[in-house]
Image (cartoon, rainbow over the protein chains, first blue to last red):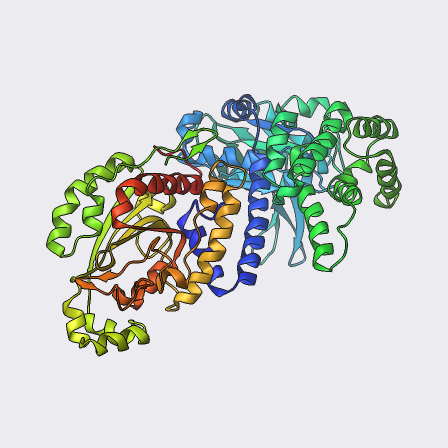
Length: 377
Length: 262
């Protein structure tokens, strides 16, 4: 944080300094924490120009796009940023619409076809159809974003619209609604999904053949993020559905970029060199084991943990906490939940790399392993 | 007197006409000197990156200085030689100070600095004491207490040195203290004793030298207290010392704002 680079930041610092030295220190701590959060966001956006181009072009040229990569690579943030770019200049991306609105949803394990297309509810004692997330998004002409699509069984959720995703009109279900009586009756209408060459999406609730039609426009998109190493749940996507989406890989940052990145998250000058060296070594170990690769965003909070540990002991008038212990704890707190899901052979390879590269000592790695048991509960 | 850094010597700043402006004894003299001074400063502080402003500040009530600011011992001595407050005031030039503010545009949103926010490089001349101040200071919004401003400036200086740590400028900046009462009240800005205030030669009455307070009001106290890097120099050393000093301060300002500004 540089309070001299911006007049408002400077004035906030000056006001704190006018109050007292203690208030100034508190102000600087709060700003440092805020800066870390900002940098964490920026960290996730640090990706190669080529990867960024792939994301943009995939969305510009395809109806359905998935960003795929390990956790911590900033897939959600990247997608969010690109969508903002598209909304600002849609013509640059080949769209004729004036802006882009999005409907973000996070799929849940219990999701079914009903959740995304057409479901049912009971209203005034009568069965009534309700739009799923997909139909709602088309009717509102909002792009549908499935964030962390791996959390639901997308084959089950989207299996019924595979043909539509290929560009064809398809009947996806029946719309049931009770009419206003007396006498009360029930009506059923077929529900169709289709595509149009027009820019905007439309919804016709009373077509000539008595159906209900949702037509996605040429500028409409369904997007998603997907990671195969989720700590809690992963549903693999089947080939039939997978090939309806363009996949853009979002790889972890390389070691050089990571070293630059992690430096920004270190505030204690006396710890800068050792934290950069050790945390980078741990990150490098993950890069070296294919099934253990993780994004930089998962590691950036480690310096703050170590610094807080050292500071707290000093505040309490105690000797500085053991650096090696704090580093191992920071690693466990940041990445442990994911480590706990790794296969034993992956953990074995990862542990050898972490120790060989000097990230952690052998005993520290053994301690990490001992703690993972609780994380698997 | 240029300072060497790992990346090369810090270039001195061209200051032709600046001394004449800072020590002008009347508004007319100050206005007449400004053209040359401004043109000279613009060569080292180009307008696309820096905003240069000036202020010519006359005294409001010169007689009040005798009552409120001249130290009691000195006041008694002046009275003993037959000087009263009106006679004291008559011996002072009309101008209390002339100042130049030079702000980095990139620090200010929209690129337009305002005097009551942020920080800037500053030059102030006190013609009655032939003394010039150079430094980097903020502003005195927020409290009328010069002591609180001084405390804040001390803390801001520490933050500034932390910001410059690891650069060539850290050692250079460390040589400039923040303002204290010695600067805004006493002789902290004077390398050597100053015995003349305005037209009055007080060598016999104040052999140790005159404090700044004999020719400044309370607003100047607050103003000086906002300097977190400060140095003083006498008029006759300006030509020799100021180009390098201002060059250092310019480099420190650029370093603080973390920009490569020509």
